[in-house]
Amino acid sequence: MSAPILEVRDVHKVYGGVRALNGLSLSVAAGEIHCVVGPNGAGKSTFFKTLIGVERPTTGQVFYKGQEVTKLPAFRRARLGLSVKFQNISAFGELTALQNLFVPLRRNHRKADIPARASAVLARVGLAGVEDTPVRQLSHGQQQWLSIGLSIAAEPDLLLLDEPAAGLSSEETARTAELIRELNRSGMTVVVIEHDMGFIRSLRARTSVLHYGRLFAQGGFDEIATNEDVRRIYLGAA
Ligand SMILES: Nc1ncnc2c1ncn2[C@@H]1O[C@H](COP(=O)(O)OP(=O)(O)OP(=O)(O)O)[C@@H](O)[C@H]1O
Image 1 (tube, helix red, strand yellow):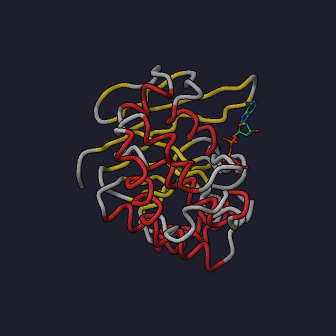
Image 2 (cartoon, rainbow, N blue to C red):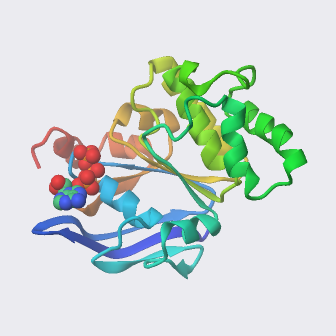
């Protein structure tokens, strides 16, 4: 396996008396799709927040491309090539799909190049043909893909997705899985934080299971899905 692009070492996060993360160590190899699952309260969101820099671990370290980023603010991590797509739609509803992309593209591209680049990003996320549609008229799935487009506009090396299939139909979910695989084929490392094992199944990626703020199991999807201990924690018995 290639060198880790992302690594957390023995991370603890305590909120008052709650141990949201309790000695979590996990690494993501450059070039992989890596899924992180776990039952309610396992620490997935807290893990996500420590990766992007909106929360700092109580103790422990976070490394990105070999550099310690534990205390680096979110915007500095973004400049290093780490991008995030949150669960909520991040686009402006009154603007068109194309116009929304002007915002992130403005940072790195000349004005004259931006419309063509924006169209290319939309095509990449399956939104060719709706360039001039105001975002509020797009379907929920299309809005989610636009959010992914906004997150990849700056061509990140690592894309973090927080429950990208939440609220999507089964057809939209399948298209989202295909989009993630396509982004990965083009060289992007993708980390997917997810609650729903059904979606993870369609990604067929290496999967880490969190439980009580620690790494509980790790392996290929089939290994995880057939692991008796994992099944038990999902049923709430462990
Ligand atoms: N800001 C906070 N203040 C206090 N407790 C918190 C805070 N954030 C998370 N927790 C607690 O930490 C634990 C882990 O929460 P977290 O949201 O990271 O889990 P999760 O795996 O994302 O859960 P879910 O799948 O339900 O979203 C839970 O017990 C939660 O109540």
